[in-house]
Amino acid sequence: MRLAVFFSVLASSGLQIHALSPEYLACQLQKAASSSPLTGCPEGTLFVSPTDTRANFTKVQDAVASLPETGAATILIGNGEYFEMLNVARSAPLTLLGQLDPATASDLAGNASQRNLVHIWNNLYVQSGVTDEETATLTIAPSSGQNFGNTNFRAYNIDFENRAANYSISQALVTSITYANASFYGCVFASWQDTWYTGSGAYTYAFDSIIYGQTDYLFGYGTAWFQNVTLANRACGGGITAWQGTSGTKNGAYIADSKIIRSPDANSTTVTDKKCYLGK
Image (cartoon, rainbow, N blue to C red; front, top):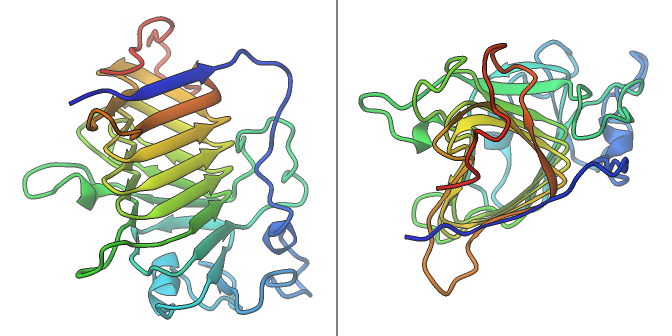
């Protein structure tokens, strides 16, 4: 067992980088009621909304399950709360886009700030008969009998959360990614314990995003790169990272141009400054 965590945490320089995609922004911005919500979207994009009657689906997982195994696909997710768990097993590229308000999409606060309108969450945690992976809000892994899962999963401006409790109740994953390639831009990942999991054979990338947790909230066996992210300590327990690997490989968590903060939602009596270990 070895810990492979490489930190390059830079002090604030006043420069903010935003994860707004020139390719997809026109699709993501909310439209007037007289216009199609899919204006500016790639051809064939599916629209999900819990309230808009023009939507193809009301649940994100239903849209994912409807996709054929081959061919790149895009899903636009409308403003709202989605109490569900996502499981992506298809190998063909998939892009999930969170709808954005034109008035706040370019918020100079960066790092997702409060601009995200889409919140996907569940509330499972590890207890008798429930494994780590089964608690994840988002699972990306190959289907049975396949060696590798999604070759190019991307998500933009979506909040993924596990709301099992407002303390470290047990393992309560947000992501579980194995044998797949996945990248996230302007997203939020919020739990208390084991928030982010990059498993064996997985390569993951998070940019301009926020990750909340207390205990071992970045863990895994694969390779994860975190660029311009905010690690928000809700409290201290264990370490921020808990990574396993094999000597001689480059597996690990690589964290660059990022910052560690006391989470804004931390208990008022919780002290995190110089109290939280980077890893174990």
